Amino acid sequence: MSIQSKSKNRMLPVVMISLALALQQMSMTIVAPFISTYCKSLDGYTPLLAGLAVGAFGLMQAILQIPFGLLSDKYGNKRILLTGLAIVIIGFIVGFFAKSIRMLILARVLQGSGAVIGVGYSWVAGLAGDQDRTKAMSVLGAFVSAAAALAFAVGPLLRGVMSVSRMFLAGAILLTMNSLYILLFLKDAGDRGKASVPRRSEISFLLRNRTFVIMNLLAFLNNFMMMSVFYAAPIYMDQVTGQNGMWKIFVPAILVAVLFMKVTVRWVDQGYVNAVLLVAFAVSVLSILFYLRPFSFHFLLLGTTFFLCGYITIATVAATHVNEVVEDSLRGTGNGIFNSFQYIGNFGGALAMGAVWGSSQKAAWLIVTAAGVVGFLLTALDRRVNTKKAERKVLEHEK
Image 1 (tube, rainbow, N blue to C red):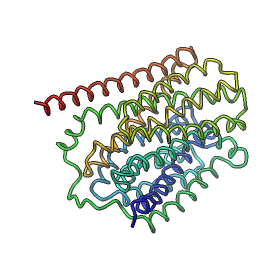
Image 2 (image 1 turned 45 degrees about the vertical axis):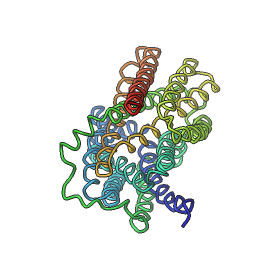
Image 3 (image 1 turned 90 degrees about the vertical axis):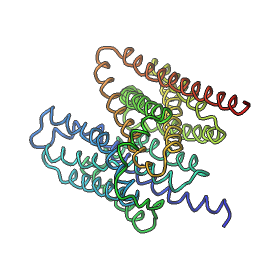
Image 4 (image 1 turned 180 degrees about the horizontal axis):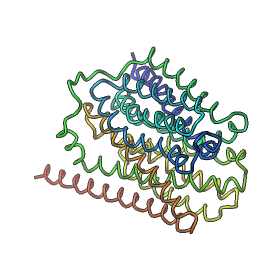
């Protein structure tokens, strides 16, 4: 079998795993803007319980990414991924039948408890191997990131034709179909046959890896910016396009961002990881300038396009780089830590924007800009350290 044929055979499982994670991400993001108002129609509603229903998903995702990653290193990616997806599906079904606010909170907890995005990243990285890893991770990154952004455009359109409870049911049906395909037709990347989860010393060694730590910090900052922008931008879009017209901004922005990412990952394959990350953070920071004229359709389109170009590229490149420095025996654990940092970034971004937005929109955008600048500087620092290490190796070799 030719190398090209082997590459194609690897990509179908990658696409199906990416589709499962994208469906999970989209199903959760689509309903997110409507949860707080939907809660008012349920028995036992209070503003506090409604807030708990909104935040329960992200909190559980942040907490459980690492445990699921640890378990995948022991039992294999396929088994743990399907277990997590089953929990999500049960959560969707509970959400469909929820008549009280407490039942909805339980549904959201279950939906968040299927924290297997890190497991999916681990499986894809293992399936692809060193040769196709960047390409495979770019497919996964494009699916998941585009799903999150597209949900903001699709959500209002779906909400016009179905209730939130039926949106939960639709998510359960789509995820069930995709999970059955994974169960019946996909093979794991290979059982590691470990007798136990990774030891504390192994994890401690991983956390001392400078590149791994910096990539996790970049993931936190990238998602902090993403959640901040997705908090504020739809508010502006609603006044310019209306909820049903947001797709006019999100759809072209996603298409351009995916093309941008496909171009930049070619540079990653040539060894320009830090350069690509520097460009991506610079583009993300630049995008904020366009949001300072919030009532212009063209400025909103440009701002969202620039931001998604930076966001999707950073998410893809950081995840790829993490999987290059993590050993196979710790791949699930490493990806679990990485995705926990992403969800903590989601929480931090939403919290920061919610706290500042009402008093000063300019201050809120300044915080987002500062996060991007910090990401740029961290990347530059990592590049400088790696350059010095390379120079020392050359000098030692010459001696």
